[in-house]
Length: 109
Image (cartoon, rainbow, N blue to C red):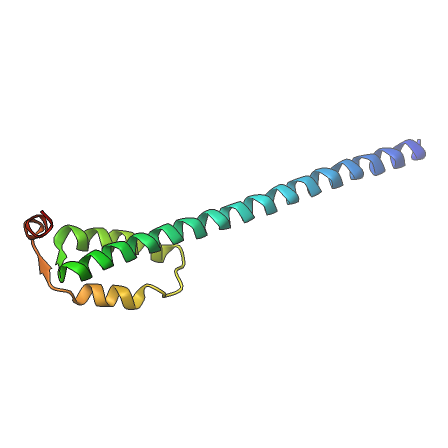
């Protein structure tokens, strides 16, 4: 009887150990993938911010819609734990003259 109990405990411990290792490996893979996704999204947001900024620099001013869009994108970029790379660019963007969206349409066409 003791022998059977001992075998049962050892067998179930092995199964629990295997299951635990499997779950830990899955969690590590998930965390790695999640970090990659976050870094990818952050890179795309950074690119978008630079694109909006470059357009404003070319025009010499910011439209209301550009300002709103930049602010929304920057908020999400920053919430991902941005390291401040875009802070000086945002400060420069915020200092630009603001014009109506119609002036952008006339300028481009």
